[in-house]
Image 1 (tube, helix red, strand yellow):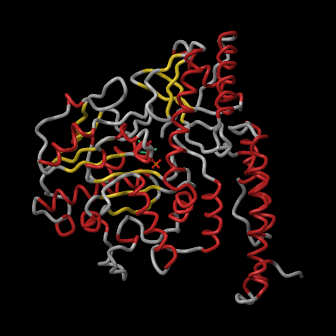
Image 2 (cartoon, rainbow, N blue to C red):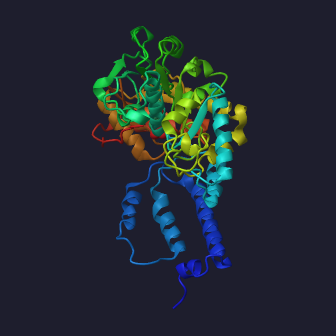
Image 3 (tube, rainbow, N blue to C red):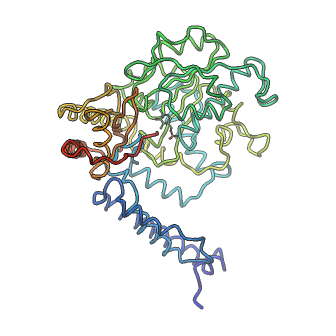
Length: 482
Ligand SMILES: *Cc1c(COP(=O)(O)O)cnc(C)c1O
């Protein structure tokens, strides 16, 4: 019987054979990854129904025994790669997903080989985490003493900040959540905008706030809170959630008009800036989020506009003591260092995800980051202008990198989006904006060029023409939820 890879790996775990096996597999995976990238332009931006159907090849019972890793990698590539949405080649405009900068994707390969656990025992993981957190705070123009932490995404970042704010408000009221829990605690008041992101509502629910406790403030035609409708009687039991970057329009709430008043009365202001907060990194767009630095806490994503791989959110809290009060795990665990990542967030064990953000910022610097933000904003404007020139309706002013489009009436819009998605030149999803169905275009992939925008506009207009020629062509499009 020939030796299986498990024999090769396990009979002598320190052997050269084990290392050779590992090196060979990493090289093979990297080769396949490189060829995936090389072939991206030849794939439809959203996979064909045939490629999706072929995923059935994965749906087998758990194997009885070992298989060659190389065969498993080949299957992953041959069956999996054709069924990917191509997020990294410039023509995917769904959600606000972003496409990675090459260096961040490459750094994640190296960090994967490192296999570090930033939850404990990784000097390099902790060092890079700390530097990347500082760089992010600086890039966003937030108060320099703020404490940041990486996590899985803006939803987790929102949750972390909401818990920190909740516990800080309670602490000032003389109620320790750590000692007494929430049952019987004085009620807090939660104020959000009508256009609050679903992620923030989910985070509120996870933090113990139900729908009936949440007050909604009306928003304007851009999707920003109307300052004149904001309650004037907020107090030291008020938790306010504002938004930098409405997911549909990119508009931000009027921070300068709201934040100082809430904080003067002892309330807590959290800002969900999953993508929009990055406007602060550009000299020419910073005014769009003016005053955001006055808040108590912020949530953002690195995996959206900062263009690093997924599973990368960041929470930032003005006063580190508020974050540590809520997140410190040292009662149960052995790391008493307040600055350790596990004492700044929900997770204990975690991969060294900050490596990707560090690599992105190290290669771009402040000016490179600003140029990326500016370029996406102008490409979004290019989309809006070209589509409007052709008769499509742009439903809200383009504030950042998001464009909202309607093609004729509701039925025609829905059918046109479906036709665009089926065509495969580009991909954009649908959303509902102030009661109307619309297509939302998010320019957040570093690979996107003016040519990509022009080719995508042409494909969109061709799809619209085909729908007008044959109004029975509609199938249900995929709805944007993020
Ligand atoms: C995307 C988004 C979120 C959720 O972020 P995840 O990284 O998907 O958890 C929250 N708020 C806003 C405004 C967003 O655009």
